[in-house]
Image (cartoon, rainbow, N blue to C red; front, side, top):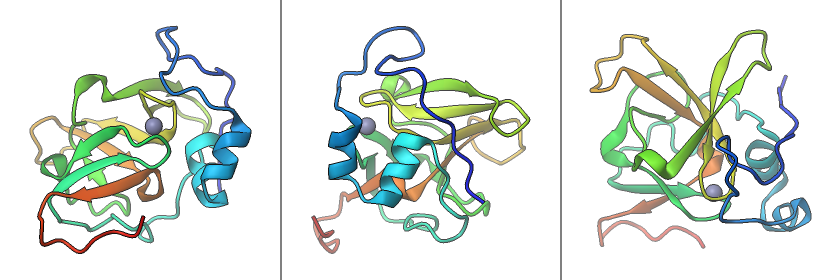
Length: 158
Ligand SMILES: [Zn+2]
């Protein structure tokens, strides 16, 4: 079962400012695969343990698959064993924005790309993971693109 929250906020961040990257839903639908579109633009959730980056340990940064903004770094990634890539902090405080999401009968905090508003996942706190922040950014692999820092790393398909 996939759950999704229809987007009702148009092109506006939670603080009322506009996302820098403003594209029509038709544009995103033409740029993204149907699966990517479902997660990024319809706040869908990828199935656990199948995502491309769930167990990735390569060094580098992770950017938004929709707009390319850098969002997370491998140094902020940790093994949560929850089935999705998990980070304890974003690359920069203003790289992501937060929305209250009450779609599944409990209030969760949704995480979106601060540049285009693409849905990334959710953030949970106080779960007791041994990380510097006690936060778990539970992010869909399909919302991300990995940019390895090592020159020897295999090139990713464009
Ligand atoms: Zn984005």
